[in-house]
Each structure stands twice: as C-alpha cells, then as structure tokens.
Image 1 (tube, helix red, strand yellow):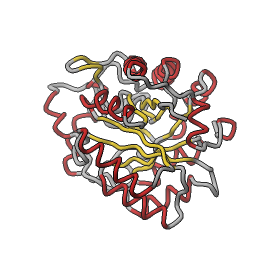
Image 2: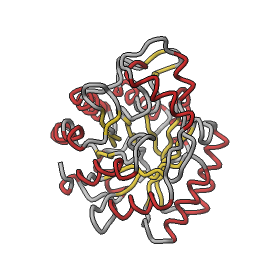
Image 3: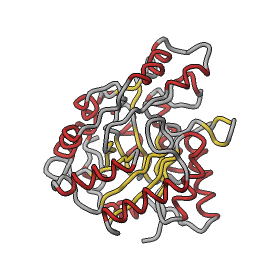
Length: 309
C-alpha cells in the first residue's frame, strides 16, 4: 500500500507556554487541536499531557483522561501516547499513562542522548510561568535516559503479552537503529516495525538530506523491507525533511511538539495549520495520504476497540 501516514505531535514536553500562544496546554485545547488536526488529515495523533494550571509537562493519567475520551469520540485517528514524558522524569513515571490507557501505539526512544534546548532560554526576557526558564536551562546538564534496561521495561510492559501495543521507535541517531536491531535479536519486538527518524535535535543527528539517506540505508541493511518509517524534522527543518521523506517512500510527522512555526519567522496558529500545509505539499508531489484504517493495516495495530479510555 503506497500511501503516506501523517502523524501530528500536538504539544510534547519541549516547548513551553511562553514560546507560542498556539501551544495547547489545557485539556480542552489539546482535545480541540487534536480533533482539528485529525479533520485536517492527520492519521496518527502523538499525545503528551500538560498540567492544566501551569502548562508544565505531566504524566498524570488523569490529565490524559481529561482529553483522550473526547478525541476518541470525535475522530477515528490512531492515538499514540508518549512514553518519553519529559527528559526530567524516570522511566516508571513516563510509562504510567500508556500502561493505564493501553493505546494502539506508543512512542519508544531507542537510546540515551544529550537532548538539549538550553539555547532557547536566551530568546525570552520574561516568562508566563516561573518553572519555564529553569526547565529550559537545566537541559544543558541533562541526559535523556533511555538505557537498554529502560527499553526492555517499556517493551515488556506495553508489548504483546500485556497490552499488544505497537511502537513508534524514535531514533535520534544512527546508533539507535543498531540498538533496535540488538533488541530485535533479543525478541523484544517483531516486524513490521515503525521507525521515526528524529532529526535536528541538539544532541542528535542533524536534519539534512545526506543524513536522511544514511539513516534509511542503515535501516534497510538492518531490517530489510519489512518496516515502515517516518521523519521528524525539528524546528525549521520540519517541512523540508517531511517532503523529502515522502518522496523517498516514507511517512511524515508534523506538529507543535516538533516545530512552533509554519514558515521561517512565522509562528503557526495551530497544529491543523501544519497538517493542512504538509498534506498540500504531499499531494502536490503525488503522495496520497493514508486514512487511519489504512494505517492500522500497514502497521499491524490492535484496533481502537481494544484501548482503555
């Protein structure tokens, strides 16, 4: 099936409320923007939660339940719950929402890295909330921990024996692909797998076409042809990397988690605006966007009737 999946990452745990008024932080905002993104053409909704009072990243299952049932009721999109949480959280904390909700998909980071956004702190003179500046600056001395033991725990908790969840394997560098290949030899995961090349994060592989081709060639060598793949281009690389990936037969991810902009120097007004733009670009170059049910078949998902929300 030669169709392109559009994932949309609605809010994430990277950007803070000061950075954009469009970033959804309240449950009703997350629900509304997710629903609008699905209606605009998003096949998969990648979801984090925020504390409704402060907009800080949250892994409280109750904060997820404040928007998940509404999204399920009003769309047929595939819901992908993050196990990344934020880089300040333990793996047990990060697992709690997915373990509680048993979604069709959840994200899984395939290695540790120096994931940092500290240069952003100097762009703002004032902040909406006291926690923001400290949070941003602290990433300079932080490691986003995803050890083999952490990966094994997520696989055991969310995999076939308990929840039957399929993973979005987030690979921030080529070594993460080899980590996944090792884990597959240990029978932690079965094909078809869904790879997400995360490009342009400080601490990970840079977002350029040569690196994209290298990641794809490495994945072909390690996994053959029985896998699906997608690309995140962080910040200003979002649309460029997405269109390049789709032209190479891959899938795409957009959303305010990955970039706050719709074009250079112009903040996006919503997640749906980014979805509309990438859908138009894809169709203009001959790609057809996959429906949620088509994507479920491509990725081997368990179905929306087997979730716990």
